[in-house]
Length: 489
Image (tube, rainbow, N blue to C red; front, side, top):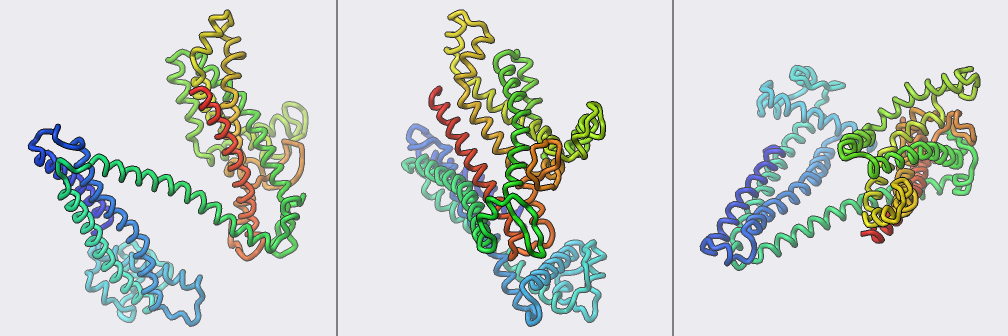
């Protein structure tokens, strides 16, 4: 039974359990809802959850464990005397591809299940046979690979059958157990709310554990990097010159400088525009204008960053060269090429406008109306009220929005890869090409990186540094916003 079909059957059993559980509870009360401890829907949800939760947990565990067990069984069939771990992975990849090809051929009717299990390379060109049903293989199939693929199919079939039996059996047993408990005195509401609380705890734990996992994966590789390269040279070095042949200089200062420089230009663009847009939308715009302008402004937040990067590379960069380079409109020659700090900073600033405007707009709207009315009642004009009452009251929240936008700018990758250039340097000229921490993380891990070398491991140290910086900014921003909200809510 296929995975989608199993999921649909579980949901159907849960739906049936909902109806049956609700009906049994009502029947035990003689149809009088007043005699029930909980509302009828709680009895139905108790049965539905009892059917779904054990089944889905078993399904997830089965999907995680089955491939590991099958790979272990099949890999033992591969002669490993002359291959290493990476070569074994390639062979197993071929085995899985041939097994999937046999399944495709059986599904297409080109082979019967018996033929797929009895094929031999001595009598059949397996590559050509699978190619006839649209399965392309990069090389001829050896006898060993074919036998392993057939064994892989056999074990996968048994595993899928066992998965369907166990998972659906748990769904039926869970529904039956909960249905049997459904009577007018059963505290169904307490049971359902307890289960929902644990589901919410699990969801929150996944988010927290994901963050912990990211941090740990960076920490271990960062520690390994500092075993190979001096930490003082990394944090205080002024030269970034990696060389996979040896003799690398991996100072982070030029990368940090370019990252902060581009972020500063981005904030210089996004903060005034976003803040002024927020003030207009919250204090001056009519409801009709706000209903149209706010969604249009927030569309900028939904544009993929790769599109912004192409916009920087193809439009903003050449436009700046026409103005500031090659004796352009201003008659100056400050900019030699389209990739520069200014290019990336301007485009990133455009990207950050909705972050600043949306958060600032919500914060300004949260200022109590009584403060506006009091200012206007004392004779202040609308503009004076905005300047002297509303903005000062909303300032902590606005600062938090700006810090969140700053952390977003520091972590941006695609815009700086395409718009800022690849040169690691310390310079005050915003029309020069520079590179950032995120761009170098990409470049150091691109290609055949040897993770035993400091030139590859440095990417994890760069990521850890960036993680600490952005995490600190986010924590500080959330602290400020929370303090503001506690003050006015």
